[in-house]
Length: 82
Image (cartoon, rainbow, N blue to C red; front, side, top):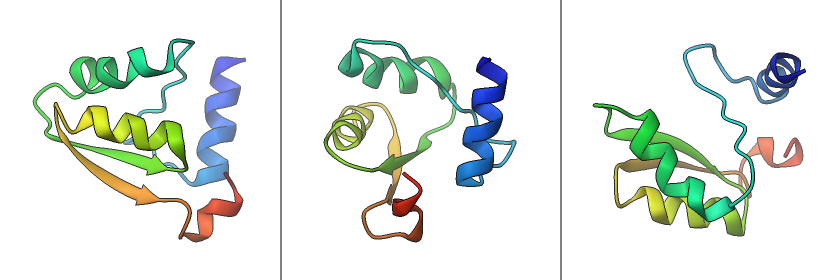
């Protein structure tokens, strides 16, 4: 089920295979630091889709650990897909 959900998500948003898709459970804000700390490794840039309040909070936390590349879904054509 998880693999099918990831495939559907990738197809819906055209996410290439060289990007990771994470489905994180509960504790919203707790994951905001964990993702850049545990996933980035030596990389210093991470992509974020800013689709509202929670995404903006994730970007704010990510700035402590990396340089977020922010895609503003509110002004792109993908906003309707979100």
